[in-house]
Image 1 (cartoon, helix red, strand yellow):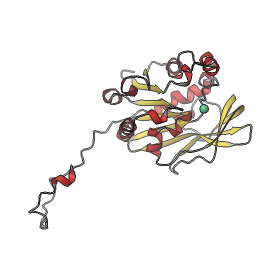
Image 2 (tube, rainbow, N blue to C red):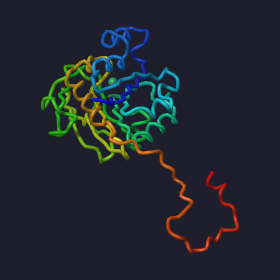
Image 3 (cartoon, rainbow, N blue to C red):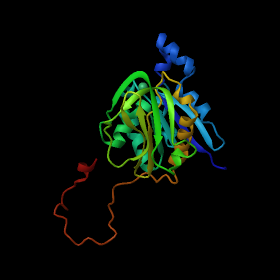
Image 4 (cartoon, protein in one colour):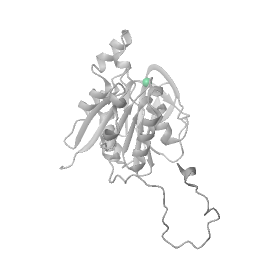
Length: 261
Ligand code: ZN
């Protein structure tokens, strides 16, 4: 392949650096962060993967970097509030123009995802290490190619319905939990020219991003979300009409330009 897909994996990178026993445990699974682990695990000939974190300059995504991204993966949990509104807005606009966005696990409450969904994105949750069975629902969909009809994650954080999502998503995977809950764990959306995939398995204290089926799903999702086109930045003023306007402007004698600053 001559042109590689430019992928950025964004991680808030907080839990993996915690200076306590839980942080020590998480580092046995992700010694140098979920972002770097995923970059290694998803590495492929057709992908050019970069990792960034919340602590980086411009929170990892200065405009020139975001504008050079085909697919953005987003892992966040306890630092959603620290993400600047202006960054969330730039991400949402870039998705509308065609960039793919893959929102991981607790990213359901991230600013970019909620902005793009327009709903609270709340869900039920429980962390007791119960078993999760993931079912592929969208037979033939590219995101579940090469994945068994169902597979088990031995320990998972339960994310359960009701999940506040808009009604236009496609259910790609559905999860069942040992405790009885179910969840739309893989959801696909289109926003403008961009594709969005939300995938819930990925709690930081379990080795879920070491699971080959989970990695296959994420790799498939990157290719599925790759833009076919990034539409140009939209210019909204249209001062020159394409047809002649004969109606007299009742405010022709007033300068209204200040109202549009
Ligand atoms: Zn979690």
